[in-house]
Length: 371
Length: 137
Image 1: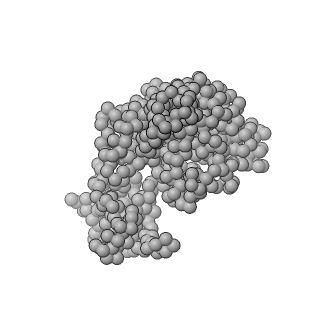
Image 2: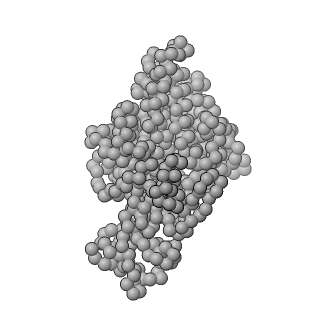
Image 3: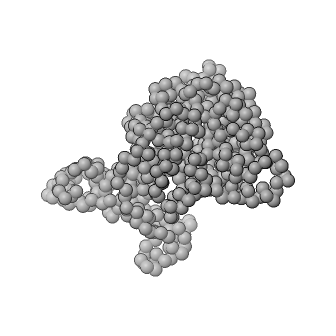
């Protein structure tokens, strides 16, 4: 193996990084009870008496091995008041928003878990509550933070209603869907939801997560977190393939989809494989009018974290060229343990023009943000 | 280079650490089993403040199902991505990627079970001057 010694870098102020758009920021409640204030009484009572019931085997614990020490959080991100990392706006400003003069932080809240809820009416209520919490507790205090519209894809009418309700509210910029769902997202029964996203101009952020009851890898349940972590791209690969082959992008050519927290270096090889088989198996999918890679190039964006770290760092630059620099957006994943620092994540030099696209311009355009 | 008194002997307990900032350079001073060592307080991987990391030992394993905890108190785990650094030398350590790399290592450096990682945290010279812990930067 390589034992090349890498010299520590000197801290620099890089104009192209300052003012960046962070495409994956996690706000948390100070206490789980904080969401109760946003729930109607019926659901507040149910939350206290019955609680969440996801499709996983366990209640109150993840069904795959997690996390790193520090409960999966950056160990320097625990607020002094004992709250959860990501729950203190002042600290988030100090460690992220002000530290890098962040222009916008795209929030991907992982609480409420409405999308995982088996009682879909309760799930829809949890999503609405979490969305109101984002808007009022975060966006109204810090306009640089932009809210995700959380929905449950298993309750079509409620999901569409929630999307339409938030349309026109500039605090909300994207619809967030966990990739580990009951069925791959391209299936017809999800099309009305996808249509509502496109019709209302909302891009979709497929952020890692979801408890479907299926093992998190195609080969069964992992034993180690080390084994679970690299399964993140697997769910993205399944959904990209589903969205393309089901014909979603033929039906909705304007739908924009970002893959969040799954890395990106795997996307070119998936595109090559899909194109190869399209030439052999196109009779089965005659509704596709372009090569799969052309739909991917048009409709799919990627975010960088958790960034791949190849043995030869310059290989990652080549990978970005294969994907297309106009489709890659930087993300930190603050405050999680495996978050990336915008100064050091790329270990090889990104050209200046591409750097501006990667850290800022692509995301401004993708999320319809006005700088 | 100038000498800076940063602590008194006994101030930092065994297994403890103290962040100091002489001459504008943030440094983390450690007491490893009675000896003092210091690292620049920045991880060479992505820049985390190393002082938030846990001080621990080193897990080694010759084969699945067998492990031993060695070098208790001599390793620092980065608070972000978990890179492990030898507090005494700043060298990062990780498990060998393959059997080939491991056997190669054992032949060249007998007894070495772990492979060096790609990063080295910057070390700072620490001296004891009477009752004081002194760093040179």
